[in-house]
Image 1 (cartoon, protein in one colour):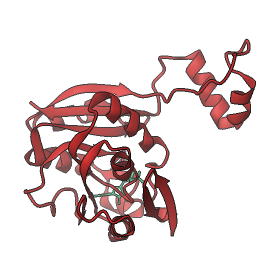
Image 2 (cartoon, rainbow, N blue to C red; image 1 turned 60 degrees about the horizontal axis):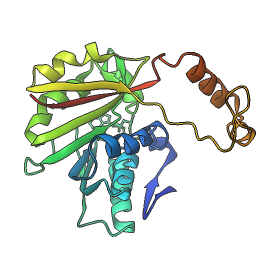
Image 3 (cartoon, rainbow, N blue to C red; image 1 turned 90 degrees about the horizontal axis):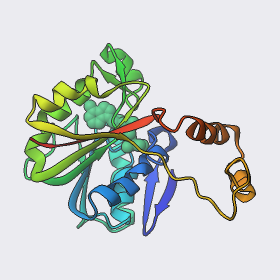
Length: 241
Ligand SMILES: C[S@@+](CC[C@H](N)C(=O)[O-])C[C@H]1O[C@@H](n2cnc3c(N)ncnc32)[C@H](O)[C@@H]1O
């Protein structure tokens, strides 16, 4: 069992349950801060160990949190995190295939998720990797079909998707045919921290040392050379129409 701390919350997880929430999923924090600020109740759909939801709660971006996943192992670590941090009065955990087992008394201000983002044509492929694959987009279809009844009237949905796997046209009709409207579709680039004066490349040496791993250097160079090139992840913000 592994742990990661977000302020006063220690999140319990297993490496095999990790679907990116520790890394790119952390982009939700500045985005939620900027676009929504503190809200009452957040739901993390397809939560895995709940890195996104618990880190939003730990950053005081909500009072209450609901997390759900289809995988009993994920639900077990979610419940352990709740117990370990004494969050029973603030956090509800559900084992649920999409939204099927969520009681309709749950009403949310904001729904966040990095759901399985790669299309696959059949259920067998999905079963091989339930973190990655969405068979025939059924997870997305069922989510957008059912989400409206759980949203407060001013509530929002904010899903993180992968630029190289999908684009907004894959989801547009699912959103609009279910009484929702698209508010925004955007990418987010984490700001590069700059310490002290920059050299001619636009970097300073402490920063360069900090990021000197080939992957990070490549990413930073790409950002400088092609500032408008699509990032790996994009966000879809939708609301009740
Ligand atoms: C990309 S991972 C994200 C997990 C977590 N947010 C993270 O970043 O580590 C997708 C998650 O969706 C869950 N999942 C797959 N199919 C699902 C379904 N039909 N209903 C609910 N959750 C599902 C998987 O178990 C997995 O935890």
